[in-house]
Length: 334
Length: 306
Ligand SMILES: Nc1ncnc2c1ncn2[C@@H]1O[C@H](COP(=O)(O)OP(=O)(O)OP(=O)(O)O)[C@@H](O)[C@H]1O
Ligand SMILES: [Mg+2]
Image 1 (cartoon, rainbow over the protein chains, first blue to last red):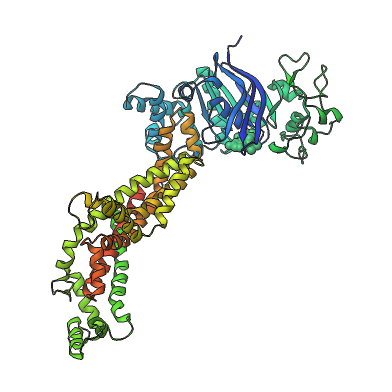
Image 2: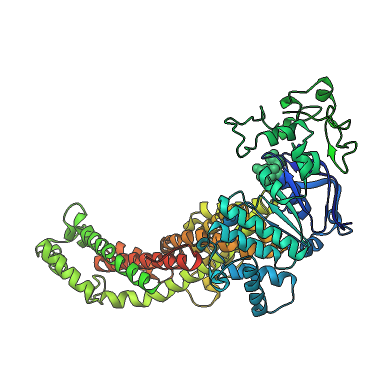
């Protein structure tokens, strides 16, 4: 039995938009992550994936966002209750993060070594030269062929793939228990993408690091994760093991997502897409948020929002739908 | 780096030539007879002829230019009409007070401007932001001669804390350098603020925070360092503005610096001295620009010297 590392319960994150108005970007999100697990979080652009990860890290400086309710229990400690200072000692040390755009995520005015040494010395009482040695070791561990040269480089002298490796080295340099990867490969070309994903798998198996992998690429989820959450309009609409999710998606949104991924050799020339677009945060429909785009939608769907409920006989599987997943074996077809 | 510096210095030479040509021309571009204008309204024709002789205005234009350029190259800038001393001897003693005041003004304007700019950016939309920007806007809008007079009225006449004129004790440096630096301080504050705000939105700031770095270091070590690139450009250009500032401040506070010398020399139509001062100010401007360009390379690793 795997050990639980993170328990997010009823997480709701809002952004103030005016004096009295605010939008809810993440609504009542509940999930958990075990040690050594790679959990996928998928959904269309703007559905709240990044905001979920920023909520875990408490990274709301400079924005009008805050965790409005819910708890984020990390290794027995509720992160939402910690002071800024306590939170800082967790960021980068126990939970670290890598981002979508590695080039702009590194400080272009600082050499790679300065940025790595800064990260190491923040959480470890070591001398500069010790930190530098460690930085060099980290760089070779993430597959950078010439660590010394890379250490002396400025970010603009590195390729995208190299930058992301540096970011990963920086995220790993304090041996965190958990890493959040927010679309780590979206900005990279395909071969580099595969290498970075391979590297993350490696890290997981070497250090038993838990990874929350945020992506909108279902292929990445299939490749990397054991379990996945599907998010829509700030809510989790389906949670399932990856095999089940691809074999028998329940929620009409998941069905649409999977149907829109091209399959090799399927002979399909035009891919089905989900009609309509993500509802605006400030003008959410009543009832199920997906109802306006759902071909099965009925009166009940437009009136009340369904709960994220366990699917009968689904072994931890959950779905947020009035119509499907209520009885065993009933699932929407594309 | 060194090669770039040399190249940059060499490329300033044509610019200097153009400037020197313009300065040479300016006396000939004055409508009417320059000798008559320089000699003054009540001058006799004998006096005018005398001036013409002295300035070499009887020579053909090309020869005049030749003499002028030869003078420049040998640093022989001729003699002051006012007192007959060489231009060099007239300017040299005025040099120190102006440089002192300029550096002082620059120093406080940079320090305070930066501080206000950073605070305003960090407290965006809050009281501190508004207060800083009100100070900055007042600094830009207040004409320096007016500001100087108001300061004299308050601190010298009413309160009697500071001397009115001259540069005798350290106290006498306060008001002139304050007057000179105000505009620059304000501009630095505004640019620091806007470029800080831009940088604080960048991805690398989020990375720095995600490392667990405290806000203080996020702001200084990351955001501010990146803003500096933009701020330095503006600051460099503003030092040029300080030169005009020195004319005002030295006049208001009766300081025997270069700025006041320029005003006086124009009044006396001491045209050799005016020429030399204009050249000097242009040179100073070019040198500052050069320094800014070189600093750029130090601050921004993306700048390549070729
Ligand atoms: N700083 C902010 N202020 C106001 N609203 C915000 C802010 N950050 C995010 N949001 C809103 O929260 C919603 C979710 O955004 P989020 O960045 O989490 O989407 P995402 O799922 O990560 O999308 P993508 O795939 O494009 O990265 C968006 O609708 C966005 O408008
Ligand atoms: Mg995102």
